[in-house]
Length: 235
Image 1: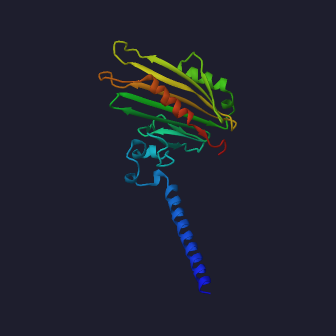
Image 2: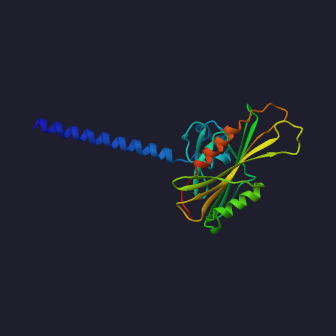
Image 3: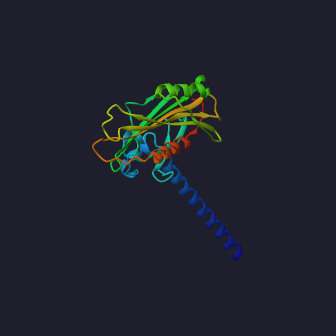
């Protein structure tokens, strides 16, 4: 009898401990579910992506996906992608519609004197985005590009990627070139969904030394583009 009571007591303890564990995990999940935009800036990572009020509205989580990058989620909830920790949302060049969303952002590295500007144009429920040729003609026209695109095939997306260099009018100034990475991402999982992108890297201040590494810039652009994940093609 005594042995049986001890067994029952052990079972009760195990049950209580189990319930306490579940409550703790539940509370933890609830805390993680709070969006960065609803948190106190003091509790957020001390980087521009979270300390800038408008930028943190796009941040899906405070968890660093990989060194220097967090996860951005579009307001139409159409896609996610890596977002640099020093990036800041550009309200002037961005827009939000029913089936289109333009997310523009920029960053400036004082140490290298390199400026990074980006535009991500998301489309859904529009027939023209299903035709990569038509979209790439649009990319070419908007950027004055006449070359070809590298096609990168992913499991759920096809990426069309190209590089171009623009030399500005003031040829007597050093470091007056912009290196751009342009193209289009077509969803293979969803119809009528795609993203047109532009990434520009340039030496911002002509009177200061600049260490713009073209290979690093291209690698960064590809990293962000390859991280794009489409979520849905419906409202």
